[in-house]
Image (cartoon, rainbow, N blue to C red; front, side, top):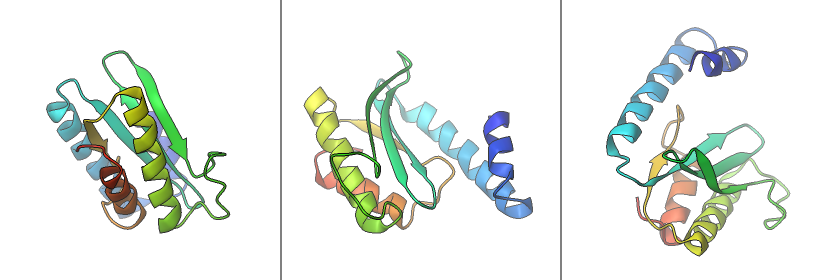
Length: 130
């Protein structure tokens, strides 16, 4: 966790970093408490792209991954809401193909708003249950 905070320190400082770390730790606690054998849908958001992956924490393996850089999507701009919706739909389709329907949504330290919310909503519409 400390290493991740150090990486974020370059782009965030002061109160912004403190709020991010607080949200990150709170989300981690809730995800670990509610996991119960489910895969974790982890989302990473940058200014230019959005990434999502399904992780089986019991085995320590990534089951499915999708991003705005995925060749299946052929997006011009990966940093907008429509790209997040496409990534959510793609990760849900790949997960269902692998036989995974129930997941826990891990937004990390990001606020559930905008691109994060769009990805989650499109994954739900495509058939994931969380």
